[in-house]
Image: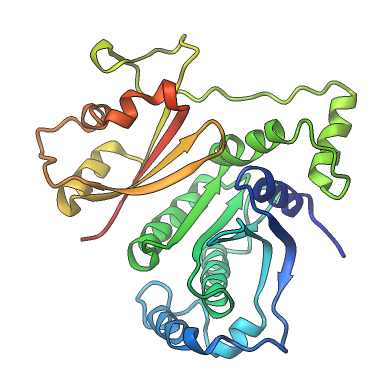
Length: 313
C-alpha cells in the first residue's frame, strides 16, 4: 500500500500528540458494512442540511447519500480509546495547495470534511468527532477563501461533540510538525515512515528550526503576571478568526459568542465557549482576555496558545 509522507506525519501526530490508541492511514469503508439503524436519521438530517445549505449545496452535486458514504476514504483515522474519533486529511503540495482553481480547491476540501463527517456519524454513532484538514503550504488568496468557508462550516455544523479544524502554513509547523518531532525523538517504530525520515535527518545532524511562539502584541501588564516582550523566553500566541482584530471585535459585539481553543505544551487541546455578553465597544479585546484566571496562569499550566473564533447567534 502506498503511504505518503504527509499521511505518515498525520498518523504519528494522532498517535503521539492526540494520543490515539488505534490509528490507521488510508481508511476506507467496506461495501459490506451496514449503517447503524440508530444513526440513520441523524445522517440523513445532516446530509439534508448540507445539500440545502447556501454555501455547500453544490459540493456533492448529484451524489446520493449511500453512494457518498460507501466511497468514503479518510487519510488518517484515530480513536483515543474512549469516546473521541479523529478524522484527518492532509494535502502536501510543494508548490502550494492546489486542486485546480481556488473554488475547486475549496470545494474539494469541504467535500472531504463533510463526507468524513457523514461517515463518522454512520459508523461511529454517539462519539465525539474532530475533523481536521491540514496543509503545510497554502497561498494567501486560497487561504482567505478556505478560512471564510471554515467560519461558515463551524457556525452551521460544529456543535458540542463536533469540531472542524483547518491547520496550515505556520500553524501547521507549530501545532503538527514540530510537536510531533519533539514527541517522537525517543520512539523507534519502524512502521512510522515520518519518524524514520526524521531519524535519517538526525544522522547527519540536520537541525530543524523551531519558530518561537510569540504573542502578537507585547504585553507589559505586571498585575496579571503576563510580562512578554520580543526578547522574553516565555511566549504565548493569540490567534483570532477573523484574523483582523478590529473585524473580530466588531463581530464579537454582534454575536457575543466565540469558540476558544486552548493549546498546551504537552499537546493537550481543550475547547470551550466564551460568553462575551458583557463585552462592550469600549472593552479592550486583549485586556479582556488577560483578565481570565486561566490566562493569568499560562506559565504554570503550560498554555502556549489561544485561538478565538466567532460563533453565530
